[in-house]
Image (cartoon, rainbow, N blue to C red; front, side, top):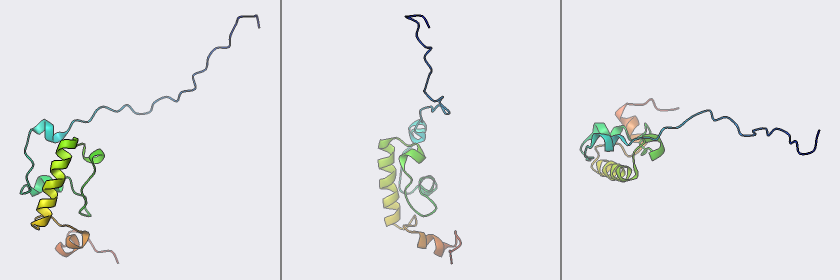
Length: 98
């Protein structure tokens, strides 16, 4: 090789497999209010085990996630939503594991 010639640079970066588009909060887009009486809407944000889903799964913004958590806790207190998996078993929605 002659002096001054350099080896061609090899890119060591991995190609990106996925491109993520920013999530839009569904509650912001709908501009709807979150209430503890709207059980159908709250059930979308509760797992089958009765736990509140995290933001990364629901796609809700921080403001609406806080309001959702408060509404779900109020609905649980008033027994509108099940608070534990045992309550779901008693309702007959899931088969009990043996």
